[in-house]
Amino acid sequence: MKREECILFSGAAGGAEAEFGAAAERHGIEEVNFTFDGHRDARSRGIRVLTHEELEHGDVSLSYVSKLMHRRYPDTAMFKKVLQCIWHQVNNGQEIYVVGAIQPDDTVKGGTGWGAEFAKLCNKPLFVFDQERVGWFRWNGDAFERAGDPVIQHRHFTGTGTRFVKENGRAAIQGLFTRSFA
Image 1 (tube, rainbow, N blue to C red):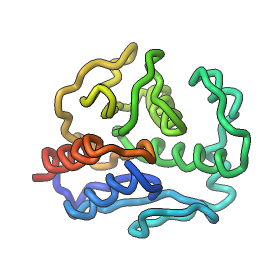
Image 2: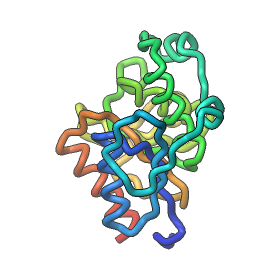
Image 3: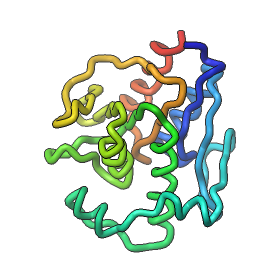
């Protein structure tokens, strides 16, 4: 796969998304970072400010997401826009890479968990680097299983995750890009 044919879809937020973007830039991979007016972005490369109408395409019921994820989310305009941006990231990627923590119920912690859940619903290849268990896991359709060290297989891929990325999460992102684009 040629790096000049690849695109990372992400969200430009601090933490894992900024790390995915920095790795893409180091490896010569184009990036598209979905954002919205009023969001504090950590990345400026590849910024794609979504219009009100585009954000609405990614609208999802907070009560549905809360039930699906077995937790409550804040009912604020800002949080809804974050979820809508995540929808665009996952919708555009052919495979999804997430850095965070897998919960005992096989959901991923935090708002990022919606991206992982949406990837499951869309039946897209989903890999999560669990910073607590220090390893990559792949969704097999029923549960997460250890994945070893994945390699990006599709030209259009998504990288997202927690704002609280640890050093092992940074190393996992860098290793993913090095394996895939060396």
